[in-house]
Image (cartoon, rainbow, N blue to C red):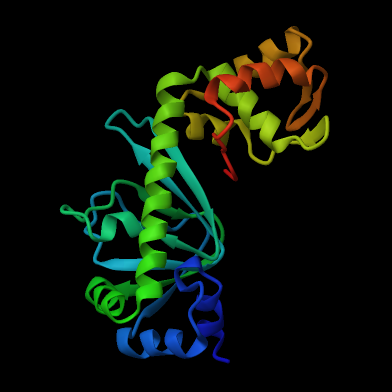
Length: 233
């Protein structure tokens, strides 16, 4: 099997499709495969989105930045996955975020008109695309809820509870990355960790964390709701 077809088959966009159906799209669409190095921009905010992007290997992050340079990290996306599906068929098909390679990665670009043509030809593909768009909408709604209603203490508590399977664990990301994700200055994140330490909730040594009072963290995290999940940053 062609390695590219095999990689496409692993994406949720092609869930339930046969290899023959995927090969049919590949032949009709003539996609473009590009490689990006770590920290390289895949796409910039305000760029017109004329292509569906399929992340076949590696990982990317999406950012928003205001005029004052304040950065909000929206999401870390690991392969295989779809990028910017909700933007593609919007009235104003302009990217609202910067997409940056977090690791070396490969991304397949398929033209918008080819995607539309295949949606009309294959109902399973259409349903998968609509499902991905819906998932993105739900993610953004939860992100908005968290930024609007959650305190920084509750957000960090939620993150720790979700990622600490044991009482001793290593933070998956730096506090700088956490600050970008929570859209706050880095010192604000550090202050919350120091408050937790003074209150006897945890002990920290760099990214090494030892939880002393999990119930307090769980009570704080409950303010965001049980259905809220941060996933991977």
